[in-house]
Amino acid sequence: MDPKVDSNFGTEIILLAEQLAGHSDDPEALTLAYLTRAHQTAGAEIAGSMIEAGMQVRIDAVGNVIGRYAAADPQAPILITGSHFDTVRHGGRFDGRLGILTPLVVARHLHQRGERLPFHLDVVAFAEEEGLRFRSAFLASSALVGQFDFALLDHKDADGITMREAMCAAGLPGTEEAIAACAVNPRRLLGYIEVHIEQGPVLLERGLPVGVVTSIAGNVRKRVTVSGLASHAGTTPMAMRRDALAAASEMVLAVERRCGDPRYAAQALVGTVGMAAVPQGAANVVPGRCEFSLDVRAADDATRDAAVTDLDAEFARIAERRGVELSVSQTMRVPCAACSPPLMDRLAGSIDAAGLPVLRLASGAGHDAMVMARVTDVCMLFVRCGNGGISHNPAETMTAEDADIAARVLLDFLRRTAADLG
Ligand SMILES: [Zn+2]
Image 1 (cartoon, rainbow, N blue to C red):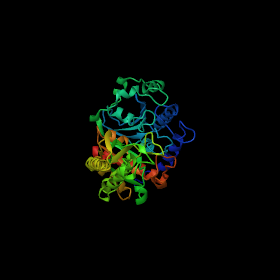
Image 2: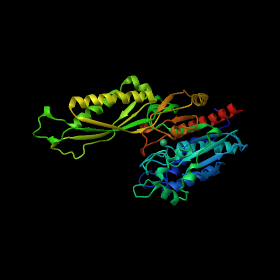
Image 3: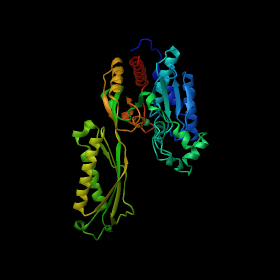
Image 4: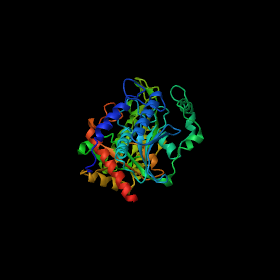
């Protein structure tokens, strides 16, 4: 640990997170959707803190707040760090924000010491990651990697406001040209590092404040429709039924069995049926139709795809045996993003230097790093999540001590990156 580090980063981070949580669309619980009034004031507050920390700040065409702790040489390469400041409905104050506030206090510390880095440190407060307002996630990081889907500009929110209108109302250009200009030049990048609250219980259970993320799980999502025969609940003998819900129930249990197989636990395989419905169902009718969703994730694409293939076959067997029809369509397919081994090793070195054991773990949740990985090397530092690991919930919490450790590890990582450049 650097003896010259005397700031209490953790206390500062917790305080900044509390202040930022004051900007909310909903007075009851923290909700911050893309480009609402509260979202804009939150962005302005982040910009103000960045300026105080000695950074040059700009807001790009999708509303990302980008603070640069500049190197002396304008042509220096760029290391990007950051995360998102929008939230889910009734979210937590650290999800995303920790990855903005941690580098912010670290940059302030460097600035106060007059310590320059041989690369530009760009802290990006991503304006949108959760997909709350326009039902499409990762808008901000997509723009940064030059892969923004312009068709989204005409998508409407629940009030009928298009994304383009929302952008213009927020003082952004709302044009394809301006959004295309958000793209970074990958040739100038040293990589991307994201600090994020774990949003799960692994570090908590291991008694560790931080961990190195190995990969970010991409998911396959499907919509499954089972069609049987709706018939009278009183007069159809059990043996003659073609019950769509009973068949679907077997399929749900097959998901749990296949994805819960302990042989795949190390690959972080998980499968979830999060929605199920019996359209036009009634208490006195044998279900004729059942629709459900399937979401499968793992640390690598091969493990996930093998599970999906097995489930397709198992669903077909169940349908055949029960005499129901099956229709399956894939609605989403996001590849897993592997973290860069050299960056992971550097991060592990910083954790080790802090006197802590290094735990490597996969991320089951998607993060901005997953999108950034399309153009540059990425790594992530997970920070212990309190309260049993609950997140996307107002009960999400972390300690100032853990935030402090995360900041010190990040500071060390930046210095190691500087040393590697020299
Ligand atoms: Zn997040």
